[in-house]
Amino acid sequence: MAMAPRTVLITGCSSGIGLALAVRLARDKQRRFRVIATVRNVSRSGALVAAAGSALGRTLEVKQLDVCDEASIRACLDSIPGRRVDVLVSNAGVGMIGPLECQSLAAMQGLMDTNFFGLVRLVKEVLPDMKRRRSGHIVVISSVMGLQGIVFNDVYAASKFAVEGFCESLVVQALRFNVAISLVEPGPVTTEFEAKVYEEAERADYSQTDPETAAIFTDLYLRNSRDVFASLGQSPEDIAEHTLRVIEAARPPFRHQTNAAYTPMAALKHADPSGALMTEAFYKLVFKYGAVLRLGLRAIRLLRWKAQKRRVKERSGFLRERSGRDRAGKGCQLHPPAPPGSSICGHAMPQPLLQASDVGLEMHRVSSAPG
Image 1 (cartoon, rainbow, N blue to C red):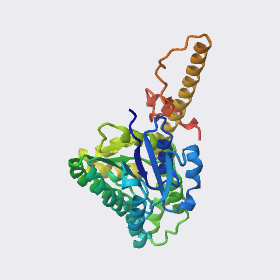
Image 2 (image 1 turned 180 degrees about the vertical axis):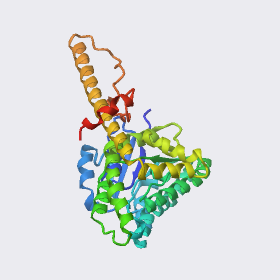
Image 3 (image 1 turned 120 degrees about the vertical axis):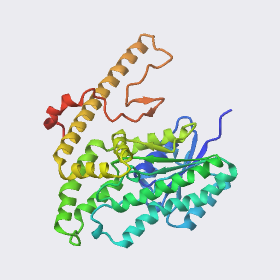
Image 4 (image 1 turned 45 degrees about the horizontal axis):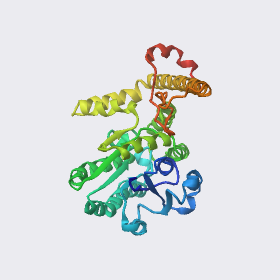
């Protein structure tokens, strides 16, 4: 007998990760999920509605929810039959970058109200029902910046540290009631959210800080950030696939990092409890070895480009071979292993960061990298 679909409530679905995840779950071929995709302003749900297509009204429903408004959260939950939410995905968030002196306290408080207290409001409303049912899963879209602060991301990182500490403290109690908590920790993700933050940063006034700090931010940080996003950035669809794996896991992990390139960064912090190793490494990376950083990023970009070309070629050959077998009447019942980055049962699989055996062999060709 088929199991009833799980109700998944996702916040921040007007664009980016929230939109990609809502559509991905709603289009699940096994129809395992009933998706409640929430947006702060329903008038801005056009992209979500278009992407949902035929799933709208069937496996996906759009509702209004503002994580900064307790009444809005309660009204949304009350509109769900039995207030039953099997999986809560807390995704709504805002960003902030730049010199600390140039950011107002009001803007900082607004960011914390969304990124941290927004999560707290959601959990306060959903957790009691989950505890009563002794089942449920709370998935939080956090960030690697909840593990390691990054220069000029002071307040944003603080909000994600708060999220991580909140969940780390809550997870033990939740487990007592058979409620799982998972933190999904992406690195750079190419979304409208990120693009807007960086566009605003490039136009901002930095007269409230000293010229040297302003130059470090505009000439070093922004330039390096563009290279990082171009070389290591993931798509919202990739994060959606990682989040799906967390949701469907029999024993959901507490932490799941989506980008293997950032694992050493977290390890570096824990390797030296004094913090000296991490601080010195980041200082040298920013102020002494910036050229090496950019060279390495371009090498990674080249390798990813070449790996993508190889995957496309392999996939094309695989499809031609299967088509030939089918025409000859020799198609097999069991599909052979799909090439990396292809799909299984119609579901796109996250692509590995790199598929090169020797980065060093490519370094001398970096100058010819595309883009």
